[in-house]
Length: 131
Image (cartoon, rainbow, N blue to C red):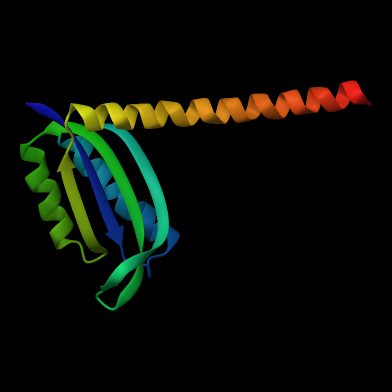
């Protein structure tokens, strides 16, 4: 049965941008080859950790939301465990409420950006009229 999942992994902060892209690409490929459909990706960037992990105080966060069979999760997490570039990872199954929330967040983010752009356009129109 296909379910929707969300996985977050934290990469070590000593990686170069190229190594980060390579690591993310590795897991995107693993998911796609396993029959997963990637719904959304979010690069959270470098963030401070709540506590030191392997003597590191920060890490590079990346989130992937995808639809897949449950059997793929075991393969994904095995690959995570074998990768020395990862500090931590977490994969969770999303229920219908979490899926709806994520969709709303994605779509709502666009609406708020559109509203901000419209407000800016109106301000510029007012300035032109006043001059």
